[in-house]
Length: 166
Image (cartoon, rainbow, N blue to C red; front, side, top):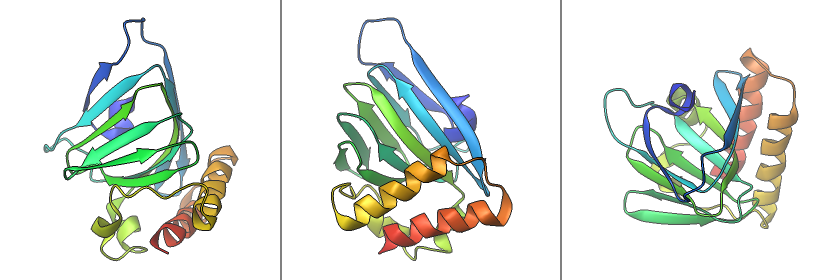
């Protein structure tokens, strides 16, 4: 199921315990929003023709999370947000367990709200900052809301992207 949302990844458990995880998915406009929870794990998305062309916004609920892309590693704590590109190689690590809300966003939607999104890739938005609190609140509400299709969902995603661009 994860590959249908995030494209193919190589996964590595970071513990010897048997794997236990959950993935919830719901539509939000032309995008998908997911809630992922699992034991300690690392994901590696490699460049290839079967990769997704989506951007990902990850809202961390983890004790600590790391995303590495373009030789830059970002660190997230609970409430922090990071944007990364699913069309480019990346590594995500969750050494104390994975717990996050992730938006899978079509490239066109992101580009319609953020000019030159590369400048924001893999930069952690601190969840304690005023903009981080605002963006985090929108992300949590989007996950808790009933599925929104079409224009309403895209407008909510657009609001989140506009806050990230700010």
